[in-house]
Picture (cartoon, rainbow, N blue to C red):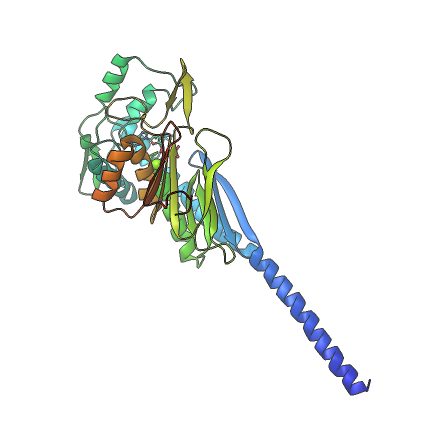
Length: 331
Ligand code: ADP
Ligand code: MG
């Protein structure tokens, strides 16, 4: 081989190897997922973003936004506007909290009170805020029901006040969804358009995971493992189930989603999954549909003009899809 050929060969070889290394390096960077979990809102919150380690700072900012939401909406943080309202009746004037309460009241109006953030006294009576939940006596339930009713909330001049001093708020059915939407906004504002955000089971599948949609699974309401999985991009997925917080007394399962109209845990369904455009409403609707049951639930979705896809599971294990392609767990 002449020396010119040798040099040309070396140049080509170096170029090829460089290309292979370059490709490998960037492929590795692309394929890497940055994942961080914090314990916020009484649950595990995880954000995954495909890309380089520098993204961890953005993830931390999104998780910090969840903490900020918790400080505003929690009934367990004594300084939160909601806790102060519950304890002493202090008016709520934080615009973000007022707006979320107003949204919850819209869902109450649409569901004729099946969804009601003033269920607090009933959850307290059933012991779901403490260590030892128990089935109350009927008279106790009737007494607590007198303290429940979203129409006792007054929203005027950017403030929430109460008509009845005994009324207390619990945003547990909607705040996680709202916080999830806020975390998503933080990511998008920082240029992150692919992420999987999980706030204690309420999920947002933002964009894709390395060119592939995110894989989502629904827990089986009665067995270990999953009811099914599917691929999802650009939607919120919220599930309400009777298996999250429950106790069994005299062979009966009592759980934390209460029908305000009866004062007892709702019995129509065991699991409801809602796939929608925003997590705030998906979260609220999952709880609302759980209380309403399949027929009234369908009515709600049509009346609200919702485009959500819904999968309901009855206690006998029957799967009831709404706008959800039947036979396959693939929205
Ligand atoms: P999870 O929080 O377990 O994911 P949900 O989103 O369904 O499940 O929220 C359940 C919570 O909603 C309860 O812990 C309670 O705080 C609240 N809640 C219970 N019943 C109702 C109801 N009828 N309307 C509004 N909120 C409710
Ligand atoms: Mg909910």
